[in-house]
Image (cartoon, rainbow, N blue to C red; front, side, top):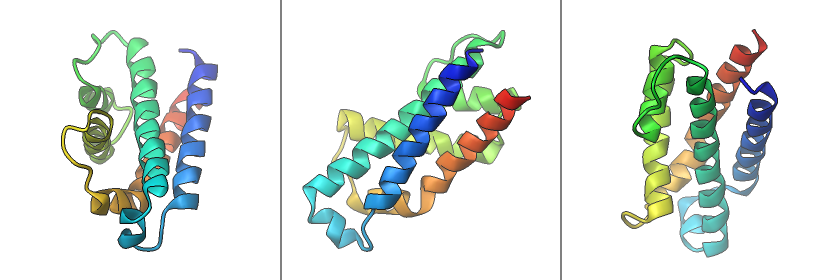
Length: 138
C-alpha cells in the first residue's frame, strides 16, 4: 500500500470538506439563485466522492480480491473486507450516485439534494477518512 498517496488523498478530501462547509448557504434558495455557489459545492462534493473511490481502489488493490466492476461496488468490497461498516458502505454508494448525476448530468441536479448533502452528509466523508486513517496507521 502506498501510504503517502493515501494520506495525500485524505488531505485533499479534508480540503474539499472544508470548502463545502465554508461555502454552503444557510438556505436552499440561496443555492438555487447562485450559479457560482452551485459550482463550488458540486465540484467539491464530486471531488470528495472521487477521492473516496480512489482510496477504496488503492486498498482493494492490496487485497487478493478482483477490482470491482463499479465505483459503488468498491465500497461493498471494503465492507466485505471489514474495512468499513455496512452503513458507511451504503452511504458512500449513494454518494457515488450523486457524483454520477453531477458529472454526467444524467438528469438535472436537484439543489435541495445538494443543499442537504452539504449540511448533513459531509460527516460521512469524515467518517470514511477516519476509518481509512485508522486502517493505514495499524
